[in-house]
Amino acid sequence: MSPSARNMAFSAEPVLKFTEADFAAGPDVAVPAQSSGFDPAVPHLFDGLAPRYASKLLGTRFIAMRDGVRLSTDFHVPLGAKLPLPVILVRTPYGKNMAMPTLRAVFPEQGFVLAIQDIRGRGESEGMFVANLGIEREDGYDTVEWLARQSWCNGRIGAWGSSYLGETAARLAAMRHPNHRASIIMFDGSNAAGDYRNGAFLQGGVTMLWGLFNWLRHYVPAISYGPPPWIDREAWFSQSWSKLYPTQPVQLPPLDMMQHLRGLPVVDLMKTSGAPPTEFDAMMRHSHDPSDPYWEAQGFLTERDEFDAPALHVAGLQERGDSAFANVNLFREKSISAMSRDNQYLLLCPTPHSGYMGGSADTAWGPRRLGDTRFPYLKTFVDWFGRWLRDETDKTQDWPKVRYYVAGLNRWRHSDCWPPRSQESLCLYLHGAADTQLRRGCLAPDAPPDGAPSCFRYDPQDPTPSDPPGADLDSMGSGYADFSPLELRPDILIYTGAPLESDLDIVGHVTLDLYVSSSARDTDFAAVLLEVEETGAAINITHGIVRMRFRDGLDKTVWMESGQVYPVQIDMWIASVRIPKGRRLRLHISSSRFPFYDRNLNTGGDNATETESVVAENCIHHSLAHASRLTLPIVPAADG
Image (cartoon, rainbow, N blue to C red):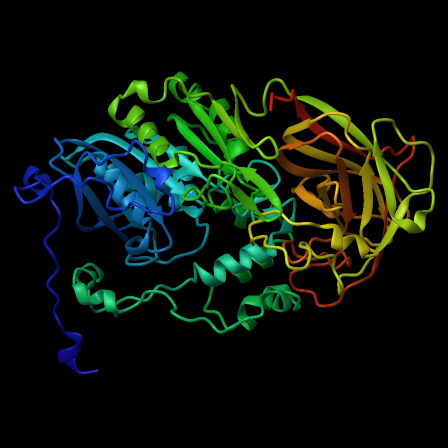
């Protein structure tokens, strides 16, 4: 390269120092009649949100972190608003220039400055990107520190985020910056206080393989393209023509995802897919030891953290591993002030992952009819930040602490805590079939008599599918399908209850306590809870899985001995559903849910790096001494 090319000079835009003139509307600027982000497909989201101001993208500023790395941040501002103003911070790995077109309009039109930042090593920002890196805590804190010093900021900063963006907001909350006044944390996996690691992609020692692989391959490769090192990054991106150069891969090699994920070893799946480098290899290499310091370095939330700001936690009905249910209680219990402790709220929504921009008057989600799922999410966001960033106390004073949608009832209900205080437990015991070859037993409220265990062969080379053929479930576990076609497989045990004598509302955390044995040194046990309709269709409610080597906790590895019976509890996550009178509950038990979860190869070795597997003979025991049972959280049925 010629010296002249290396010495090319780019004139950066002046460093942004906003003044009152920058926020002036000017005589030719009119407040729009409706939001510039209006989406005619979901008009209900904009009810009560007539714009108060016109808005614009004022510019981009590279904000220096404590180690000198600069993060590119866009500022969307209200025009004509009186200074100083509150700020809503959003930190994203997915490219701020394409992020959230609706919120980029709505927040500034309602009088907030919206600051959208490319996180370290992503998009336009400097530094090295590592997915789920703990330095997000310090970078969030340093950004708030910079924002609070600006003359146009009123010193009150909120954080909003969904999915990975929610995890950056949760980490920021744990830093307790005095100017960080409120959060909205949605559809995130930020809690690592229990059996969850890696943003909930590692659950009880089992990796959510499909979701993790899909996310890393398609959305967060390790490298973002930018200018060569002799050109200042801020100067480069201040030029309009820099947008002609994509920072992310524009086309990945085609891939038959389901077939590809069957390959071994798992650790090589990303490499053999033709994708650019990601953190997948490292995550899988460390997955065999959930207590490895690698996971601690991710900086997710634990019981050691403390909090000092109100937060609205938002989750989806079907999202396995969403941290909102744990976080609403963690934030409350570990708050250092009454203001924070008394203002933790939960919203449980009938939406898929990050699906807050949806909802319709008659929603069908696969075979399940959910009714009118429209909800004023955007106004809820605006009212929440109005309360905590502008002292608009009337905005949220009538909010219940917990609002949750009950599928089947197809209505919102509310509570003062999660799980609801009115909850009671219903135990249903697993009874084996008289003919153990049928693989069909029953669920009943009485403990089982003595009887033979129910057994099946689990072959990792022919794993039990996580989804029935043709199902429209996503890689994060959201969606409904008829699971009855899977019941022909010999590696699924089926337990069905009697027809219900009245409506049953299951709301809260579901657990399954099993007594199991195996011919293998280590294996998995997986379960799906289903609602059996009059037609025979079996619609999923929730599910769970456990890796037996971690049955006593993630910090220890314990093996099985052939023929020995072991107790184990499967976290079946949460449910919020009404089962109508006359329908039945059903439980599927197997030893895999592939490719949603990675397979246990049954060898007792490293499932990420090995290529050989062992067929296991696995058994569920149901007798007086080994009474396996399903525990359901029941709340009184509401009218309707």
